[in-house]
Image (cartoon, rainbow, N blue to C red):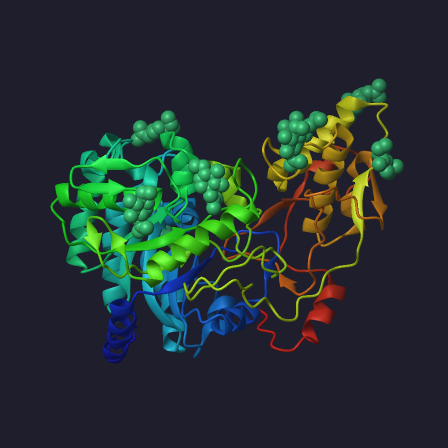
Length: 503
Ligand SMILES: *[C@@H]1O[C@H](CO)[C@@H](O)[C@H](O)[C@H]1NC(C)=O
Ligand SMILES: *[C@@H]1O[C@H](CO)[C@@H](O)[C@H](O)[C@H]1NC(C)=O
Ligand SMILES: *[C@@H]1O[C@H](CO)[C@@H](O)[C@H](O)[C@H]1NC(C)=O
Ligand SMILES: *[C@@H]1O[C@H](CO)[C@@H](O)[C@H](O)[C@H]1NC(C)=O
Ligand SMILES: *[C@@H]1O[C@H](CO)[C@@H](O)[C@H](O)[C@H]1NC(C)=O
Ligand SMILES: *[C@@H]1O[C@H](CO)[C@@H](O)[C@H](O)[C@H]1NC(C)=O
Ligand SMILES: *[C@@H]1O[C@H](CO)[C@@H](O)[C@H](O)[C@H]1NC(C)=O
Ligand SMILES: CC(=O)N[C@H]1CO[C@H](CO)[C@@H](O)[C@@H]1O
């Protein structure tokens, strides 16, 4: 039976009005990682940093539990991966059980869910077939009505590549191949009295559009500017924002609100992706937002923002390039990568870091330098990089200058750490060896995982590669579902305070 939760609506509306009129700086936390910070730790860290809004990829029950009665406004998503699963695709009505099972319980337990992102970037290039967003959207909205969740705004997130490549914002429009679907979607969005969620990475747009990198920053140091009638653009953010404003105008929605679902600057995986540049970008950007400058076409407008992202995500889909796996403001272990003042006052400060993270032992898995069979070495290297993150080895990344044998060591270590330092995972057909000496060189860090972490499943099984089998290399390729930490770690976990462990 549907539970009537409509009594929550006025409260939620009030919260929305309060935050909506001010503009907020929120945090996006994707959790597409081999290990992730414990949710209660993250909640504390955000609140200590004055952040009041969080955007999550899925309403994982353990994260929702940590958010109960927490003051944080919450945005969650009905993930593409759920929809893609054959079981769900077979019957669109399944959306209703998703709402019942994953959205209703946290709302009922006092999680301030304000927004539901129905599919993430469905129109992005390279995303595969364009799914029937409008049907899924309609069905989800119906299900939310059925369960009395009408105070939750439905929206969908979109990356900048929904727009055509243009030289001026006034020429902007949606890509031809998605235009019809976008118009249908906008009508639904308008009917739901909701907002457009837009995701911007100026460093990527600068590359795609051939803009000088200075244009991607926000400190008005770019000698390159774009004049568009009476408007002058001195940075990529304003250009990209206003390009969407124009596209929406042309579609008949000149006043539709735009929320930045994600904006940020990665620190690895590409040219200019460094902590220094990320710090510089955020300093300019956060000042701009805090000063309520708006953009040339929407001057003085408060803009709600989710910074992307809380931590690195070494399992993030590489469709948009290797950089986005490294877009965390914090490292995977909860230490800040660079200075950032979330208040936008431009103070020269590091943010408050996660309290209570503990590293695993200083132990790495590396290549034993046995080069007698290079076919075997390359095979093991390829397998390791297929299932674990090797984007730091790519050109222009922090580990791009390693020798071939160090490349192999890097890959082996990523598997070993991703498998919680399970010794068996350092086998690699006899090519792996453990070492207590840090193999890191210069800016190239060989990470050690953290103990105070959780394995993320997010409702989706995280498939990983596991090197348990010593007998044949064939069996090395077997997969297993990584869901529980080994028993010893579990016990350690249980003695940690503030633990909201999912059972
Ligand atoms: C814009 O240009 C980039 C780089 O040339 C290309 O990859 C992308 O597909 C183009 N986008 C559109 C919508 O044509
Ligand atoms: C940015 O720089 C340009 C040219 O250097 C200047 O005309 C403009 O006033 C500056 N804008 C701000 C907000 O400082
Ligand atoms: C400003 O831009 C120039 C090149 O146009 C560059 O050399 C300089 O480093 C930039 N300033 C800052 C603060 O990054
Ligand atoms: C492999 O060779 C490199 C370079 O000579 C060396 O630094 C590394 O310690 C060697 N690894 C092992 C396991 O001996
Ligand atoms: C080298 O390794 C490959 C792949 O594991 C194997 O098929 C091949 O027989 C090996 N070659 C020798 C000479 O042992
Ligand atoms: C790699 O080597 C090139 C050429 O020597 C150098 O320009 C670049 O800065 C190096 N990259 C790193 C991450 O050390
Ligand atoms: C190391 O691996 C990266 C990524 O696969 C590759 O681009 C690079 O050329 C490799 N370096 C060497 C020396 O093999
Ligand atoms: C997960 C789930 O609820 N799947 C259901 C989707 O719809 C089909 C057809 O009605 C059911 O058989 C599945 O159980």
